[in-house]
Length: 421
Picture (cartoon, rainbow, N blue to C red):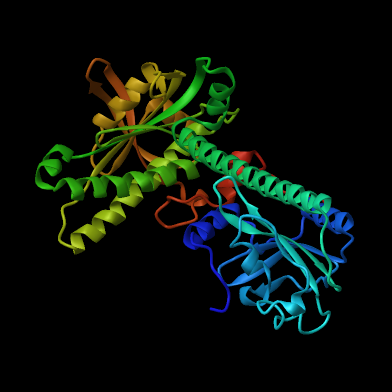
């Protein structure tokens, strides 16, 4: 190493890093200061140099080529200036053994005069220098020396302002990212329009829905499985199934309401003007049943116990709203919710059990089997149907789970072909 190093070099470099200025593009605020320094001193060259670990970055320069932006630290006088607490003045560089062999002093443009004021921050670390150079030997008057010191203080102030602005920007970006994460979490709990209303008003007006469709699922023998599985195995299984359920529910335009133990609840018809929520709920029910059926086939091959499921669906009026203060909960209430739960509990493993009210909405598109009137706890006799599949003419697959283009056209009401050319 052929240049001196400040005693606090490690701390100085750490402080410099916090400014995030080394290697950055020119800025008008620094260019104005180097122009002012050249004008004050009558010198052809002035620089704001940021002294890094091994190199020096010319943050701003007056009178030097645009391509001259970085130099090795051992080739510039600034390496000496930052080791001082006051102005370094070299009246004749060719007569000073420390500098006379350096580039640009011993070679073109043959700099003969150098003055460098260390840019010392409030913690006492020299971040760089304000440099003045001339091509002829000279001295500085007291007034010019004081002017250089004042411009150096303004340069440090500009560096501090730049750092504060950068910290503020980063804080704003972090705040925006945190808000985005918070908004995403809210949207996992609340529908978009409900979340927007809550954010705007701080409360949500309860809504009456004259027609909505509620879907319930429940795993058969869950309590027995919970006793035989480890906590990790149990949670991993539930997480895998419920994550798949979330995807299916979202794909069919339903709203996930909640999970209670091994029970899963979703609803359709709570937002927008959609009237096809019974059909969407039934399509979702078939997709849920297929997902569990395929999972059980894999489990049997692996020698694992089955997870059978019951699915119940009912259509009726409900009230929706948000309750809770510390933790918001979006939920629905009404007799339709209770009946949907009874549809699930009165069903059979591997079947989608729908009420007659739901069946009347969807029977044009699906095949099913009437179960007649079934006794339900606290409800008496309720007419039910097992939903088997989509009708073949509306199905894109042999199992009758995925609808085809004809189904989409029928649902949109476009049953005729229109020539628009």
